[in-house]
Length: 248
Image (cartoon, rainbow, N blue to C red; front, side, top):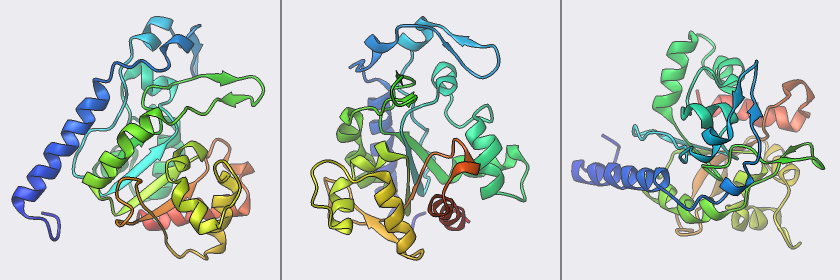
């Protein structure tokens, strides 16, 4: 049982988390379905059909009483088509993250430890792929899903640690980062500004809050997407080293 939470309180927390997850999974707004205009190739020779994209359901983790909240931009194409979030088919997990977080474990044991520790959501839970030719990467989703659900999840879960991966995941918390950065410009702080802040903080914790309960603050780590580990800057690698330390 969690410290400071009664048996009835823990049961209520589990019910609220399950209810919120079900609401996300059963969302029928279909915010991005009109953008799925062509089949998509994944790794190898597999092609995801338009029907798989359009008929997919919002993808979010199962609740297992996890202590860590991990927020990334959107499901990968493979995860969306397979409707499976924590999978060894996900090369980011199997090839990069798990071996560094659990270096002494085989992948099957490591992913079970990850699943029991980390609750994974996205800025947009139904946005697998919208490519920008100008930026040569996926366009960032808007904040519809984040503004609708982030506060509910954080205020009920009360995580011990929040991991924010990529710029889109930081936008909901811009009220915190603007204050920390003394950011007076319009728009959102850039990911580089936030990564610099974390680096210059010399590993001390950065605390953020949800918009719905600004009195409750949560330890956080901000990381870039590790699409190419070898090209990350010193400050970006420091972010991952900080993450590995906090997860162990």
